[in-house]
Image (cartoon, rainbow, N blue to C red; front, side):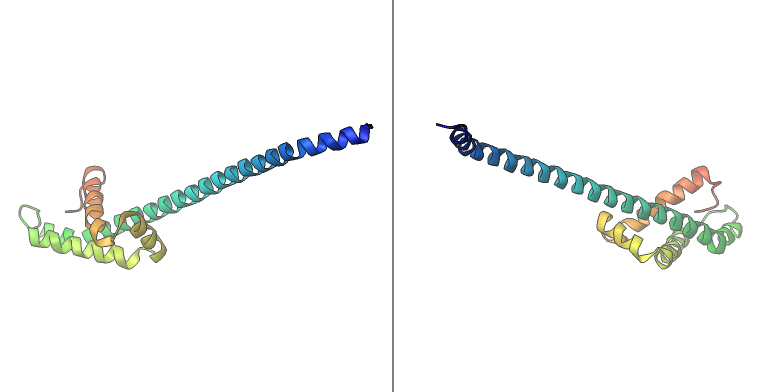
Length: 143
């Protein structure tokens, strides 16, 4: 038996092992690439949601300020106690919601609705939270 015969027999014996090892390495590589792709997708989705929330925050603050300047402040000034009736407060919230809907970019709104659900279900609560923050930290010019 020559060295060539021994090498050929050794190659025939090791070929399935090497093939299995290569297949396993390819499987590990594919799994790694899928995890990396998922991570990139999650990071992109997170960044998109954060940008939409930042946009919603900006537009909500503008809506509250605009409503205060064009509606709430005049009503409060005309009252002895400086407070709005419940009907006036509801009307002010509707004005703020209309302002928000008219000015929020549609792509940001789509991201928010995909993440938070229908706009009507979260917008009033979101604006109320913004009003509360404005009252606490912004001087209380609203509501």
